[in-house]
Amino acid sequence: MITASIEIKAQFYDLDPMQIVWHGNYVRFFEQARSALLDRISYNYNEMYESGYAWPIVDMRLKYVKPIHFAQEVIIEAKLVEYESRLKIEYLITDKETGHRINKGYTVQVAVGIEDQEMRLASPDVLINLVEAYQCV
Image 1 (cartoon, rainbow, N blue to C red):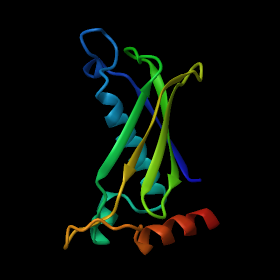
Image 2 (tube, rainbow, N blue to C red; image 1 turned 90 degrees about the vertical axis):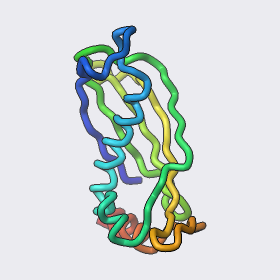
Image 3 (cartoon, rainbow, N blue to C red; image 1 turned 120 degrees about the vertical axis):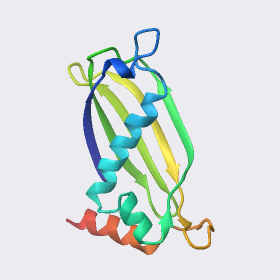
Image 4 (cartoon, rainbow, N blue to C red; image 1 turned 135 degrees about the vertical axis):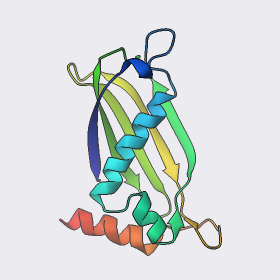
């Protein structure tokens, strides 16, 4: 499947009063990795909108294993695991230096027609064609 990775260094503004990365920031980290993945297939949010679809997140799961500390460098990997009826992306956050797992999770997005606001039960051809073309490269 298609993957993309980004690197992040935890900043002071990411921390909570316990001096670890606030749990809500993991969602932001997932979003950054998801955008890198969608860029790979040329179907990020601008292209989604231009194709007539919004892709809201309808399900999300995060599994915390260890905290991220100030100035810690981490790698966030996003992997496309489903695309035919929904967009399911799995995430893995690891420590850059040790490779130890810090967090994992997934998001599920579904196609919604922008004009009619109707959820689609199958992914639109534009997404399927882009994923399959990328896999053939």
